[in-house]
Image (cartoon, rainbow, N blue to C red; front, side, top):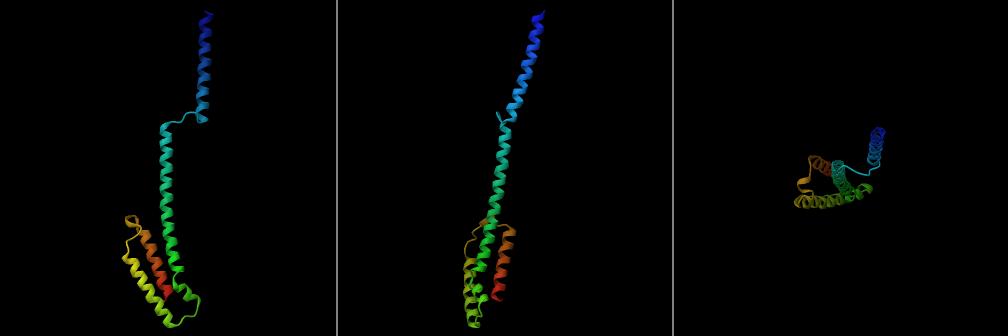
Length: 132
């Protein structure tokens, strides 16, 4: 009789030790559920897409700011231009704006209403800097 009781107690101790081992292994990352990996990858891909979209928006904003700052009107604002210089630069800018409008949209179908609004704000600011 003592042998079956001993085997039952031994089986209980072995089961408890095995569950402790599995808990420890799960906490330390010994085995990772494939569903958890897929969810983590989906979260990382979503974060990457968000970062790329934000990067594209920031790139467009920087281009708009560069267009404003690097125009010849910036130099004109710093100096005291003659009316002839203002007319010459305005004509050159009008031609450049017309060329830009005729070119294909670099953002294509990805351009959102917010991007278009930023571009129009930049154009309006450029016109205001030109004195129109």
